[in-house]
Image 1 (cartoon, rainbow, N blue to C red):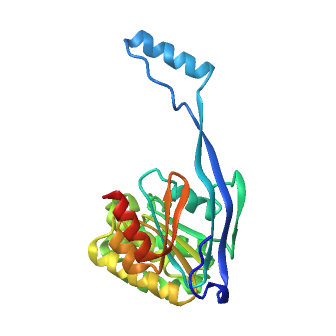
Image 2 (image 1 turned 90 degrees about the vertical axis):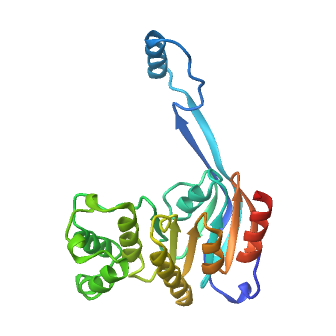
Image 3 (image 1 turned 120 degrees about the horizontal axis):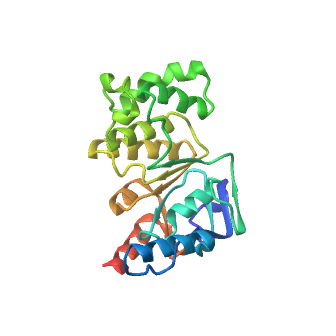
Length: 259
């Protein structure tokens, strides 16, 4: 388990201890038969009688400690286990073996984080803030700044979320999450669909959160974003912790091997 300089003097916020995550995928792994409609019907009958089940060992013995003030970039190729690891830290997936210990309840902000598409952006801001534990008075106080930060225009904020572009939805999700201080905030590709100006604002906001002694995990395929925003990075490769250390050093190693 890697330690950065000064870690012994800082307060741990997340401890991942020998974590394994294995989940089962039903109806996967079988090779499809070629043929006509009759063969397709036979396949459906077989699956109904005896559905195929495949086990996926997504996380394999990962251990590390996150500290107050850390902004940790989480990097790796598609399917490497990054999102599974983050969901386990957030308590959304159970550990098969090992354990995760966290200070408070980590807040998970994913690209598909739930906002109610049938409700207006305004109502989603209110409900999102209440769900994070704010009082109604705090929501009223922060509402204008949340909307302003998101860049969602006044005529759109009163429209249903289903009318929003993916970028507008991503900006509003992050703005709601960033309105409150978090012991641990996990941002999983939630900034990928935001525009360039908003990504810059969100990076600065993450730095502010880090300065407030919170811990932020940032999952991103943008190595520039990781280097600009994070003091530390972990590289997940096929479910294994490949490297943990200074963000620039980890990014450099990852890019060297990927090239």
